[in-house]
Image (cartoon, rainbow, N blue to C red; front, top):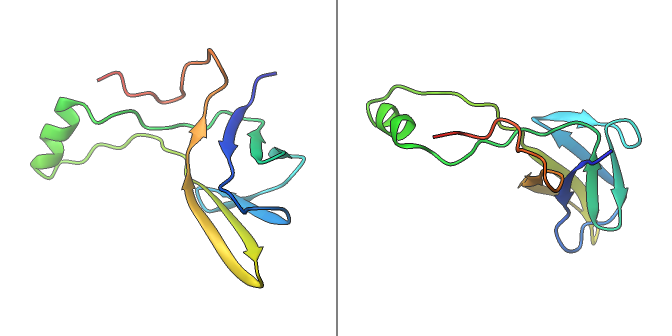
Length: 103
């Protein structure tokens, strides 16, 4: 089974806490850590580029919403608690990105 990947920033080492959209994820249940990569067992949606019509309506104050999963990682380095915010998920090779914007 191909999995969605999130590259951990340099210096981030376990123990870590992983959040998707602010909800804590469980290692072994929701994701696994392999070297410096998080492997998720479910697809993570990423909003595609902002197309003309979405930009146009936004310019007039009319919002549109797309699913977009934010991945954050809380970790400790040198005795300080830090957060790596909005890490970018990558789809499995050859997989179509979930919630890709067709515009």
